[in-house]
Amino acid sequence: MLRTIGTTSVLLALGLLAGCVSADEGNLEAASSPAVRTTAFAESEGTVDEGLYYIEFRARSAESYGHTFAMFGRRDRSGKILTREVAGLHPASTSDVPYVLGHLVPVPSETGPSDGDLEDRYMTARYRIDLNRREYEDVVGYIRRLQASSPVWHAVLYNCSTFVGKIANHMGLRAPNSLLFPKTYIETLRAMNT
Image (cartoon, one colour):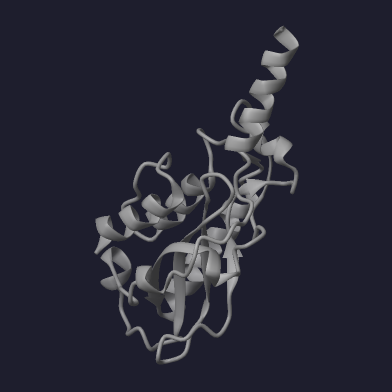
């Protein structure tokens, strides 16, 4: 009886908390927002056209509660993305086991793209901010330092939304509670700063 309860608990945890594994939940076109400049970065010197860069805070679907991450790079004058780089915090494995364990104890992390991050069909929310060259170099420098100092992932204490929130805070933005589901997290981040 005890073995059945333990096995059932583990299987339930695996099913509910697998996290960050892609699943198609439809198109995001209606959920996209236009480029917006906000807070401290909006008040900086220069114009948006100096350098033509962006950062986009994103949420995507997954088999569990989804994933939050940042995408950044160059854009053209019409706002079309020319280059994309991803920074996001997630367990350093494609196995479900670290995701489950990461709800109990910190597990080793990676801070680059995870499966599905570059596929627009999985996006559930996004918030783009256009940047000039100086702003872009500043935020990318911060992202690199954050990546180097984020060796673990924990579902509650240091998750993908916490990681994105630190980037947003560095830019002078207010960040919502990191325990919100990714789609709600990005929508709330956008609402708090526009």
